[in-house]
Amino acid sequence: MGKVRSLLDDAAIRFIEAQHIFFVASAPLDPSGHVNLSPKGLDSFRILGPTTVAYLDFNGSGVESIAHLNENGRIVLMFCAFQGPPNIFRLYGRGRVVEPHDAQFSALADSFPDHENARSIIVVALTRVTDSCGYGVPLFKYEGERQQLHAWARHRGPEGLKTYREQKNRHSIDGLPGISS
Image (cartoon, rainbow, N blue to C red; front, side, top):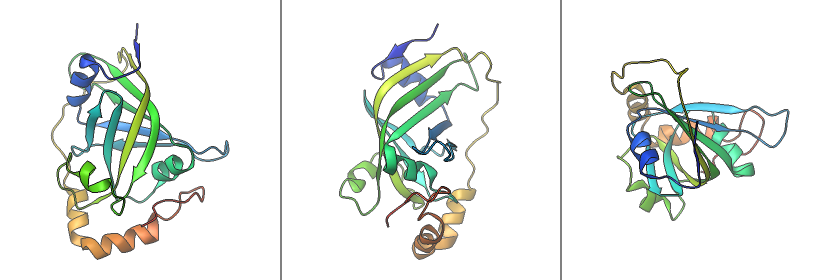
């Protein structure tokens, strides 16, 4: 039977820190809008405290999570074991977007490896932490991180990334505002 927690305890922290991938889900308020679910990796997640987590948000073809958080703040992150004992942790909370021009960005960025491809940092104030069995999650072998995203960002350079964000990340697929810079 799963547990419900109000914060990250030692068991949750140990499990989460051992995972190489996590998933982020968000949704707009409009019931006809698109729900978003994105996989994340590349050493982009940090636990900032027992009720606060953050992840680097890299440049991408869409801006759904950012748009949803700017609209309503609702977010859930899921970590599941693909190796070892089966388990799933879900972190529910209220998220906010911190962009590079925001005063907090530099201090938060110090918690992460240097990634030239980060367009923002998502900070989540946790409201609920749950775990469940994970018996239905298949076993997979971790082979390493993909390097294509970093190579793509280096190839574009800072100005190219700025242009890309302006072209691709201004609005969500439902027309909600995306990044501001």
